[in-house]
Length: 327
Image (cartoon, rainbow, N blue to C red; front, side, top):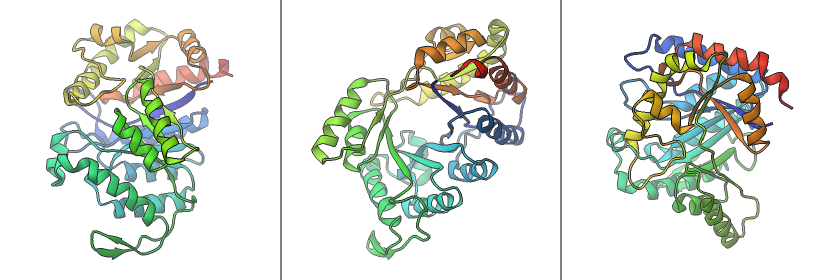
């Protein structure tokens, strides 16, 4: 059976019929539901300064989700490390890892939106250097020992419960990310469906003498919603999918790739890509069989400001008519 992941970015565009408070409440209930129904992870991203209230503080939400659940992993995908003081990030992650040992995964990314770098007072041109400095700082901080950081002595306590450190991956869409992940001896979470990234990563790991790494290459499936009437639900969900797709596409730069980039601006165009899928229970079972144990089915039940009622319909149908048929 593929890994089951549930994702939340908690955006509420102007045309949505819900509120941020309602979305956050539903998110927490859905995370508990996901744990009860065999999901492997909750995925939460990070962006800043958007009109729709895109989640800006993923570690804060991660702490609430970890407190409301017992076993499910929480993956911050991705934490834009160059925007932050890495010592503070190390402290926050250490606290969460002590509260819920081994259940937080930190996927680090360099970021790409000019507006976010301007808002943080960080030069976008420095993001590669800051990413390297940030990763090095995290690993030093998690030893619990004093170390030099930008000319001053700092120390982060407590140490994380997970040794030698909490789960960290490098996310990215190009060879630089693959080589960075190998250099820091952590896995690569590719953002582009390009198998050559795994080849670059493997070669760089060999150069580093790192035998414990792996690269995750995504499929072009960004959202699955289970429905007993897909045509009805495309009419209801389609505008939210178009909003989700069009805003991400608008942020995409020429030097950036994403397996989930969709240029369509109509419901029919977005639907035709196959990135957003509204499927019957039978089609969901078939998709799970097609993806196999190395694949991932991603649910995004509040995508683009979808009402919790619609999201729950899809989740409940999955629980009653799909999950019992998955091995």
